[in-house]
Picture (cartoon, rainbow, N blue to C red):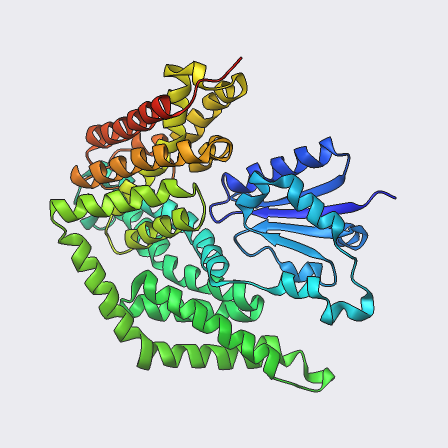
Length: 454
C-alpha cells in the first residue's frame, strides 16, 4: 500500500523559500514514486490547499515552515517539523523521516509524541509570522510615500493635493497599521484566533506610545501568551464554552495586555526605541560602515535563515521610525550573493559544472529581485568556499551602502525598486556598492574554488 504524505511550506516573505522548498520536496517524491501533496503559503496566499480528506488519508505530515501554517489541522497525525530551508537542503531526509513515523492511534492522540512535537513552537516562528503579515504594509506604505515625492519633496504638505493623498495613504494609514499588525499576528501565531484581538490592541497602544516595532514585538508576545494561558486555564460547562473565544478571552487578554502596556511596559520600551533611533541617526561614518558590514555579513551567512531574517527584521522595523539607511544596506547585501555567483560562473566557467553554470543564470535573476536564497544550491554543494566568499561581498556592499548614505523606503523589490523615483537615495552610488560586492564575491570564488575535472 502506497503511503501518502502531505506537506506545507512557508517562509516569512512568502517569495522564495516557500516555493523552492515545495519544488524540492515534490521533485524528490516524484523520483522515489512517493505520493505527496504540498501546500504553499506564500505572498500570494494559500495555493494547492490540503483538504480535510487528504489529511485524514495521509500517513504523516511535513511542516517546512518559519511562519504559522494552522498546525491544529493536523492534530493526531505524526508530524516532521523543520525550518523551511531544510526542505531545500535535504528533501529526501524529510521524506524518510515522514515514512518512518508510526501513525498515532486515535485514543493516544493527546499523548502522542509526534503530536507533541508538532505543537512545539518557538519565538522565532512567532516573530516571523508577524513580520510576514507586516511586510505588505511596509512595501505599500514606503512606495506610496516615495511616489508622493514625485510632486516635490514637500508637496504633500498642501492639503487636497495628490501628493497629500499619497502621503496620507502610505504614511498615515499603511505605516500606522504596521506595528498593530506585527503584534496581532505574533499573538495569533502563539494562541491562534483568541490572540488576535489583544495582539492588535497591544500593538496599537505600543504605536501610540511611540514604542515602535520593539513595543509591538513585546505586546505581541505578551498578548499571545496571556491568551494561550486563558484558553487552557478557563474551564466552563460545555454549553457555555462558546463564551470563551468571543467574550472572556478577548476581554481579559486585551485588558491585561493593554494595562501592562500603558502602565508598565510602554515607557521603558519607548525609551529603548528612542535611544536606538537617535543612535542610528547620529552614526558617524566609521560606525555606520561597521553597522553596514555586520548587517551585510548576516544577510549572506545563512541566506534566508535566522541570522538573515534577524538583520532583515531589524531594518524593516526601523523603516517605520523613519530610519532608512539600514534597509538599503540589507537589501543591497541580500542581492549580492546570487549575483556574485552568477558572475563567477561567467568569469570562471571551468570551476563550475554545466548544471551550476545553468543555475548561475537563474541565480542572477533571483539576485536582481533581492532573493538571497538563489545562492543556496551553490552553498550547499561547497559551503566552505562559497559562504565565506558571499559573506565578504555582502559585508563590503552593506558597508559601502552605509558609507554612501543610501536610503531605501521599501523593504523588497531589488533592482525594480531602483526605477521608482525617490524610493532609493543616491541611486548611482547604491548601484556601485552592489556592483563592487558582486565583483568581490565572484573574484573570491574564482580564486577559492577548484577546477572541475571533466
